[in-house]
Image (cartoon, rainbow, N blue to C red; front, side):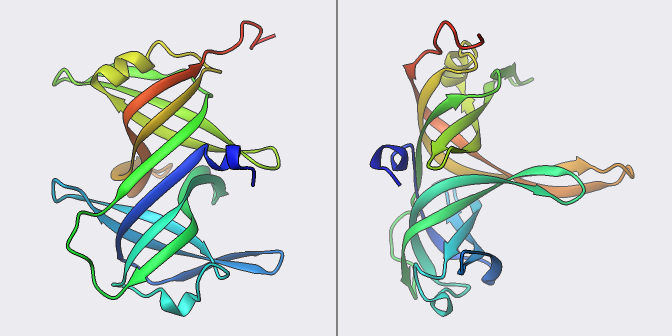
Length: 215
C-alpha cells in the first residue's frame, strides 16, 4: 500500500474485547477473524466497534474475550447481501497490542479520513434545534478500491457540510461510534440493528470538485 493512500484512512481505538473471536473468511490462504471491542467514552457511555484481523498479525489464540487491546488500522466497508444489500463497516487491523488488564487511562477512539463526497450531504435541524448533517465519504485505497464511510456532523460543522457538493475532497477528524436503531422489516416486524459511523469533530475542505466533474 502506498504511503499516501495509507494516510487517507487512519484509525486507532483501545478497549476491552467484548465477544468471542469468530472466523470470517480466507483470501489467498490468509484467514481473517472478527471480534468486537467496547470503547468507553468520557461520558461513561460506550461504543462497540467491529474489528477484523488477519491470522498473520497475531496468533489468534492470544485474542480472548475480556482482554484489553490497543488497535491501529483502517475503517473499511464492504457490502453484505443477506436478502438485502447492506453496507458493513469494520476496523481492519494493521497492528495490535494485547494486555490482560486495562490500564488506568481513558480509552482511545480517533480517526482521520481523506476522501470525496459521493452523495449530496443531508442537513436537518432537530425539534431541539440541533443542527446535523450526514455525509457519505469515499476513501480511496489500492487496486482501484474505495471504502464508503458514513459520517455525521454537528453544529457549525453541519452548517459547513450542507454547502459541500458531490466530488468535493475533504479531510475529517473524529471518532468511530455505534448506535442502535429499529429497522422495519417487510413483514411489518421491527428488528434492532446497530449502525456504525464517524462522529466528526473537525472537517477541512482539501479541494473543491473540478468544474468538469459531471461531464
